[in-house]
Amino acid sequence: MELNTDRSADLSTLGTLGTETRNEHTADLDGMPVADLLTAMNDEDQTVALAVRRALPRIAEAVEAIEAALRQGGRLIYLGAGTSGRIGLLDAVECPPTFGTDPQQVMGLLAGGPGAFITAVEGAEDDPERAVADVAAAGLSSADVLVGLAASGRTPYVVGGLRYAREIGATTVSIACNAGAEISRHAGIAIEVVTGPEVLTGSTRLKAGTAEKLVCNMLSTATMVRLGKVYGNLMVDVRATNAKLVDRARRIVVQATGASDADAERALSAADGHAKTAIVMLLAGLTREEAAEALLRGDGGIRSALGSGTAH
Image (cartoon, rainbow, N blue to C red; front, top):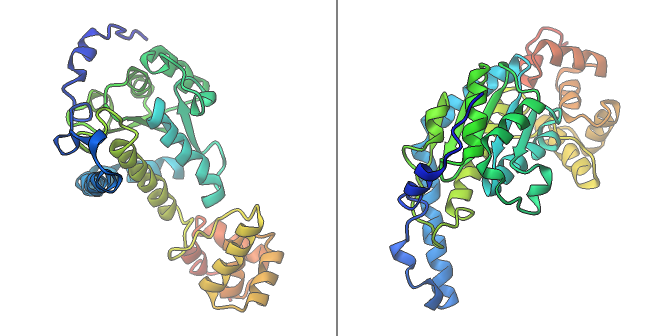
């Protein structure tokens, strides 16, 4: 795969990007009293959610594509550099404890490797071939969805990964914070959340980073809701791996079924701590084995399991 590594054209237009221009509302940032400075930041932050709202149709399209891929055994893989890559990785690592997913089902790839989460790796984002190597090493296939994140919308690492993903037939999604982004041209579904100039010129860890986090929240959470990993608004596939989560699992079972604390604890014990199984046991009067079978028939969803015909 050949990639253009000449960055001169890209850099010549970098200063024209909305995320790189100066914010007229904060031109005197260094002279503001603390209260005014924080108010200015808060005022700018309030524009982010509205920018995300304008991108909801494309975000919805991405959720549907991710859901379809995961139902067929595919994976969701985030790819990015710097703050953008860290946000994707953060969303990925939160999925197993929140939704009980396999760690390989939702992954995050960061330019420079996992160590770049803590310490910046200089020049990593400028290497598109490195992205190809990274996604290939992760086993990216046509069954997967690759989500490339770049606040600027032009990061070579992300461009390289998206190009490769399209070549092998994977579903591609881009998330950028500028209109007409370069990465949008390399994605089947282009999400552009136009956040405008930052409070601190060019510091895209601020509004742009917030926008990327909001979009990733939507992609993973909405997908998992659609996959039956949520009942009502309860995270019924939560992994109870510490005291706080054990207590949360108990409360989830009580809230979902109306059972007493004692009955919820007994059901959870019988279900090896799995709230979803305990809920089906209590609501349908099933044994653990019967509840597990009902969930299997119901594609993992509690509502489907309760209507699967195995309840009595």
